[in-house]
Length: 144
Image (tube, rainbow, N blue to C red; front, side, top):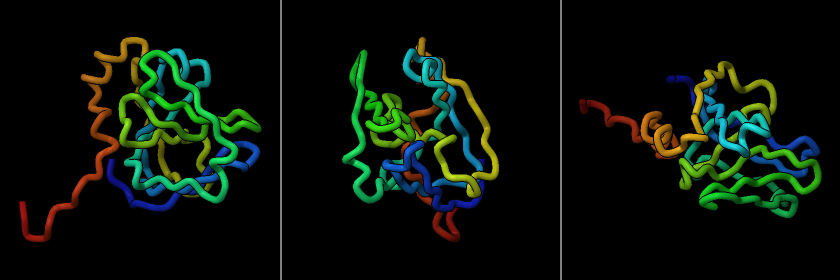
């Protein structure tokens, strides 16, 4: 899904956690049914870690929860409890941004795809989700 790359701002409900992320205006968000995402109704899009920036003293208000393989780092605000982003098991080199935590005005379209987190290995292999945290190089002019 090609669209213009912009800076999106966002964060948690109480605004103690704030961040910016560079991502397209039109995104693909993943609705996962693993036990954690399902209970939180977390639908997120994935970006390379270098395109995500935590702002101000947001780190002071974050805490992390892990379970199972402990590969995913579920961060949430200590004050309001909102998970506005986390490090996903599928993309440990990226950041999963909860699309509903993006400030209004910069997302123009959200396509929702499903990730079967209850059958993680097969879903991981079938969806191609691992490639989403990789920075894609643009072709050099004149090359094919």
